[in-house]
Image (cartoon, rainbow, N blue to C red):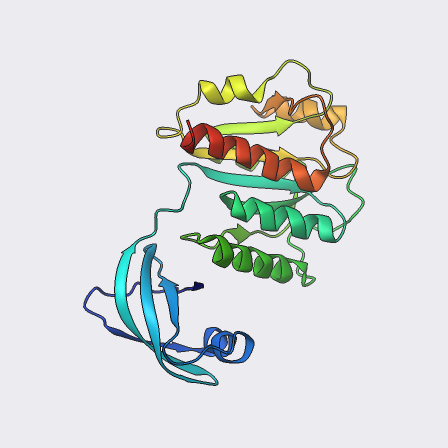
Length: 249
């Protein structure tokens, strides 16, 4: 069912809601929806409101609310992925799949081996496109929030931020042989310590100096197994492991 995210909270007493602007144009021009069709409005309190379109026009859609219930699709953890800047579609795919697997924040990160170069805080249009990918993925998989794609950061600054704000900082590195992610997660309390940071290297991986810097900032170096994953695969792989450990056992 079509899902839209609403910045405001919808009061329980509200039975009719007016949709305007880009969302209304998305329904009328892109999806070409018609009166009688249903959609879900997810508000800022993560309440899903099941609605029926009563009237639709370009720039304006009126819906009646038929049912409402809390959205329970958010994971127990709050994960921030610090993704080493990668080329083109690799970033797009990583963002899309990371959103599907529960990421809360996604931070493009400049590393020493990044082929793509973006200045910290850059506003060249990529951030807006990446945020649009996150929005569409959140709609598709029934999320209760739209994860935020942040402006690019330098790796050093990202490690400092993660060390100060997260309960667990994971740094997968292909040269690491001892740190097993499964053992770390088995001893981790997702209820008491939900904030997790995941650092992913660019196409060329992290350098030894970067791995050492991560350790100095409190990150745990881990191996993801015997195979070397592509940069666009690594973040979704780690998030899938977090989902398995926190929801499926």
